[in-house]
Length: 242
Length: 305
Image 1: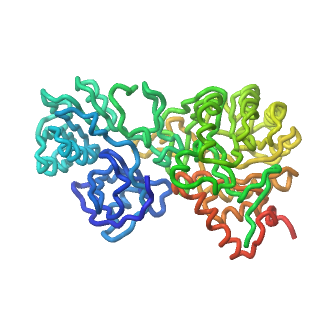
Image 2: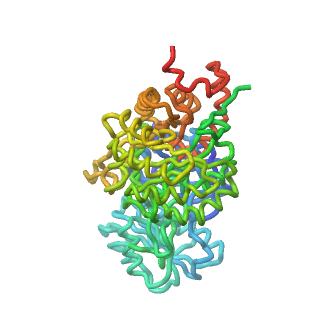
Image 3: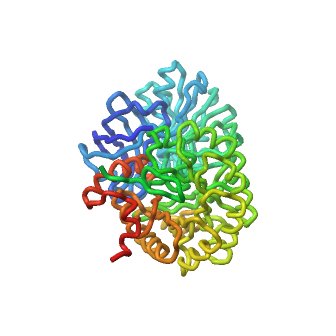
């Protein structure tokens, strides 16, 4: 983890309430896809944790949904403005653990970290299939970005307005040997029950600090108590207690 | 050259800044970021007789100028702290540490304190009789002068280390609790713990915190903490450690003027992991700005003249 001041590159809406922001600055603290950053916002006490979608030598990309004061404030920020960020938080997905054909399964704003993961898996020579779930056609984002990586991409919508009608579990392909999932808790649970292979699941919890000090986001696992912020957010399927 | 040293029950601190229990773990997350030997000391994670997971999540909520936590004293239990955490801590922290202890019965407190009393690294015991998070828990001791005195006496009987009783602000008369602790033999008073509070989510129309209520901390509570430190300083002869909403060198000085010998920094560590290091670095500048040469000389300064 490292604290740094980042400059907003761009900040643009992808859908009615989902935004993509790039932050220019030191990206060396980020060591794995699925890690997150914790952003200090003017007038708010606690930082806001947001997963990293993608990063390179100069900038990192985050995608966030406007759900409250913090994210609403972020959506009003302009390129050139500065943000105080703790970067490189959490364990992220371990690409080495993934299979030769890994399924990445994302729901809503759980999709972004899987984009960086898909790139890392491809770079490691693995085959990737993506299943991206949304409520309705108007909420879909990043389908084309996944396809541009050369990833077979299945989109599901709950109302059937685009792609496969139903949940991500309705879009699972027949063959794969591992999966990585990120999304709302009911989705993670459904994937856990539906997918026969081993996998990694990324969890969300209300956090205080984001770096392991306050014990605010703890959960019980078969491997003992874990803090979602430092021992997670990614947990192995085998350790999860629902 | 300004003098930031203060003395807490015979142990000299390089400066009065102490990360508060529950915001600093057992130190290692912060030791990875900076050399925490710059601290006066730190108060480690509230430790109980048995291991605890604490309350169900969510147990954190945002507030204006603060936060609510209902962690509920998650810790590995005193035996594990002594066997695993203290030896690791010794590698990166070379000053006496403050051991924060909680319990659910007088016997729990005595048991845990007796074990920590044997640990050379422990300089002081800070006994939390105020945590508002635990059903049947610390709350009941901290709101009743007799119960507070009973815990104090039980702990004093099993240790030769200085005992600081950490008080709850969720009482009608803080002074009577502080006096009861002093009369029962306490070596000092720590205050304040968090204020009992809650938030409700407008979307779900239910409390944000799974436990419904939790402890409110952060800059918003500084005036309440200052007032209580001021009142307790006037009422007791023993030293007071002040805490509650402190996030700057100015806040540290204000707390000392109210009567604090040392000052704990809590929620600020969670927002800025370097908060204590930054406050310590800033202290000499702020002292010079207000023509303070020696911090010890300003303790309780707001009461005189």
